[in-house]
Structures are given as C-alpha cells and as structure tokens.
Image (cartoon, rainbow, N blue to C red; front, side):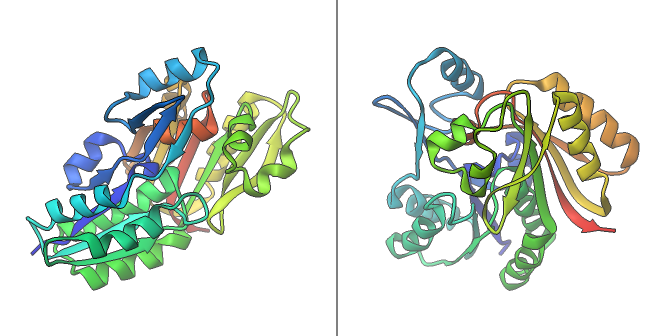
Length: 280
C-alpha cells in the first residue's frame, strides 16, 4: 500500500498542494478570547487577519487533543497500513509529543512513525511535500523516513518582519529576543535554527529586507523545492516570485499564505521564502 503523509498546519502547505499530493493536515487550534477555532477550518485566513488587526484581544494557539490526532490516524489507516507523521519542531509546540502519544489511542492496526522536522512554516512544508512526492512514487515507509531525515538540514527559511511583538507575546521568540528594543525603522530577518526562531540580520528598510530574502534564496546552487509565503501582502509575494522565477525558471515556486496559527505568532505583513536544496 502507498505510504500516507500526515502533518500539522504549522507547515503552511497550500491547500491545493496538500490535496494534489494526498497530504492530511491536522489543524492546530487558534484561540481568540474564549472562542476556539481550528486553523483554516472554523476560521479562514482572511477572517483571521481581519480579526487580528481589528481586535484588542491577542490570539493564542494550542495543540489539538490526542483524540484528534488518533482519529486522523484511524481515518488515514482506512486507506493504508503505513503512515509517516511529520510535525513542526518540538521547541515551538507540543505537536510532536502529542503525535507520538496519539499512536496508543488508535483503534486500527497500522504502522505509524512520527518524525520531528525541527522546523515550521514553509520550511516544514517543503520537507512534507518532498516526502509526499516520494510516497506517491511508491517509496516505502523506511525510505520515506530516511528521506525526511536527510532533508531536515537541507530545508531553510527566512522571514522579514515589521514587528517582533507577536513573537514576544506568544513566547516563541527564542534567540530573536536579542533584536527586541532595537526595532525602530528596522526590518528584522528571522529564520529557524536548531528548531527555534533565530535572528539573522536587521535591514534598514522593507525593500532591503525583501532583497535579502531574494539573495538568501538565490544562494542555493541546487533547489529541489521553493516557496514564498505572505500574511497580508500578496503583491510583495508575487513580485518576489517573479524575481525568483527569472533565476530558477524550471523550478515550481509555491505561493503560500501564512496560516492563522502561524499568524498569531508573527503578525501581519510578514513575508518569507523557504528553500529545500543545497548551497553552493
């Protein structure tokens, strides 16, 4: 039977791509006040950013209960006897631990293996996409897991922020704490290193920050997968894709939207690029 891929919604995989590759995405919960929403299910991305900018309530996120993971496994197990579950970094949420524990709650017999991507946002998404392509082509579970392990250090991401306040409030700021207090007229560039948010550079304008994203992506000698994601600035994302397509004309560049569960921690006007590949 074909290996099936399951992941959480922190990977920001475009819904059309997930459907195309048969990836099952478990939504993380976003909480506004006392109302609990399933990411992308009970609250659309547009609705989320409208609420984020209009509300005085700061949203929080929470990993769904074990039962949601276990029920998802059981449903996927109706079609396969091998499941690879790829989660976001255990340093960013409890998805990995929950995904592991949920295996004991399953009702169906199925081999389920859980692997921590040590990443999130579209870097995690590209790792999942590569695994799903391999599974679609008939690769067995052990080889899929081996491929994921090989791709974890090959996936990288950079994101340009207008503010780090959302990361600070959400407690996900990691080593980017070093950038706080110096943000006036500065555009910080963050990525993920060793499974947590990491500060790379501070640019002095939005335009220069976007140039930095372009230079980061074009610094790869071999690109297997690439994607650009935005929260509320589609024109910026599309312009960046056009620039990157001129450099990588044969590469499919995914356009992704920063999901509500990620948006709760990064805020609006964030722009990012992720690459799965090798540097020169």
